[in-house]
Amino acid sequence: DLSNQSLGINATMAEEVKLFRTWSSPFALRIVWALKLNGIEYETIFEDLTNKSSLLLQYNPVHKKVPVLLHNGKPIAESLVILEYIDETWKRTPLLPQDPCEKAMARFWAKFCDDKILPSIGTVFVTQGKSKRKLLLQQWRT
Image (cartoon, rainbow, N blue to C red; front, side):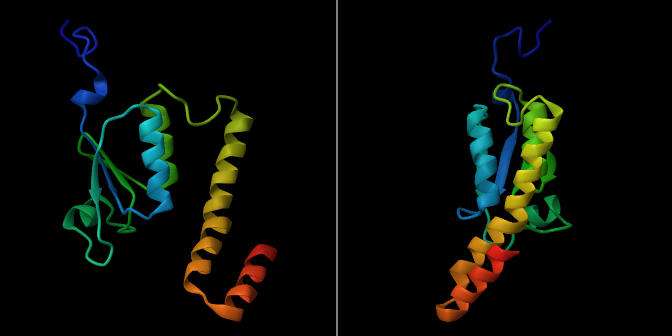
């Protein structure tokens, strides 16, 4: 048997792993952290969201945004979905707890951050003056 494991070859070296991202996306950064935590070698492809590449549009035709993980030619889109894929594919450093209830709570808080926290932070960067203060108070009350 001449499998990669019997030859002592690291499986990630034989695999194609690419990450389509921007330098500033917090959604893409969580994928970077997960890949690094698991010691997965990958190629970064930085996207210009004002001029999206044909590959990004091909690999994420529904949302047309980053991040997209390409693993052996198969695209996976949406950061939380990608994190679950990494957790199920490379089991070196589990990202989610094993206990189903704890895993559900981790997923709840990740979704809460995506739905409530990150939009508020983004709003802070584009709003100015009194409008900014009013909008922040409104965001944190909901």
